[in-house]
Image 1 (spheres, rainbow, N blue to C red):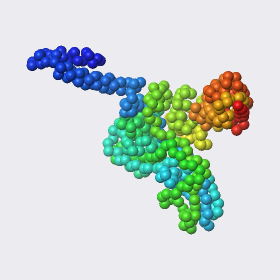
Image 2 (image 1 turned 135 degrees about the horizontal axis):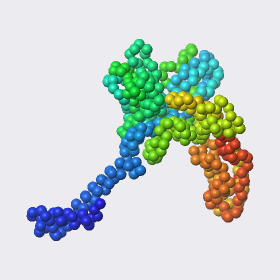
Image 3 (image 1 turned 120 degrees about the vertical axis):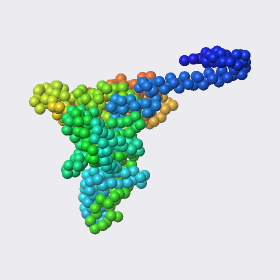
Image 4 (image 1 turned 180 degrees about the vertical axis):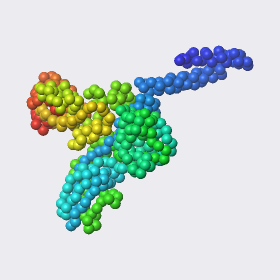
Length: 468
């Protein structure tokens, strides 16, 4: 790269060779012109160098460049996931109310919710139901060409909201729409496998791709593809006490007493995640070639499941050897079995969702079993004397907050191991104590003895006694 001085001298050398400029090359005018040109050259050099850096994942900054690397490597960013919570259904009328599966609601903020399990509420009774922040949209696509790897792209306005895609195909053989299965990277598929793959483009679009006749069936000309998109706004929050208004015509109320039923949020509808973007996407791309949906090693399963279910806060995966070691003997049913235990905040059905996700992956000669996690609580006793300039109550609140972040069961920053020295360091980091004016003890189990155990702090039983 030229320096400014080098650029000025080079410009004078070039212009001095031009007819009519020989006698002006040392003039004030040419000096100023040289400075101006050197600035333009410098800006061009910086621009060229910056553009070159976009060719390397480690130095790419533009989002489109990072997305291009994702498309090249067959990586799909983590999709948006919905918030979830409970509502109380109150029927104050004189007729029973039948609420079908898929009933939709809208909050005062214009956010859509959906009830997945049907329910019937008797007159004067109440019921509790789970709602998910999802909206269903169906798209019908007519196949315009029979070719290898036929693709369908979804609108850019929908990409950031897609949680799941269900695909059905009508081959015009009189059978109607038949559901096709997702096979990532078209792995373990045959020429007639009714499968599709998902992909993500450098322009930020999600799409689906069908096979080439060797890996996955080719969709024929004129076939109709039904894509059901489940859309979400991602990380949303609806607090207890808010009401939901039913939408659509599917709510069936005997006697027409629509006004006699209310839907009130009984536990906060929280959680959810936005589409994976930015630096997180770039870092995941570094490690993606190690996993690539192969599901062979423990880390493969953890990456796959955390990517699909971002609400997972803790997960452990083990196989036949670890299971036999845990019980101290061999068992035939452990052969080729993969055990998964996971914990997700506000999602008691995470086990069944994990099993459904794994059942959709074409794996050979492997069985899966979900083991419910068990939370093992421990307590912390902190006593000490804070500096006179600090309020003990404020310091206590500060310590509790930090303990919750570091060891709370619902903390994303929870440490996997509980060490006394770490708790001492946590208290010391408050900066509110004189040297040696505090003492910390750990009470209860703070080491796991089983593969499905989570060690987490019980703040209600922990004691923090501080004085001045």
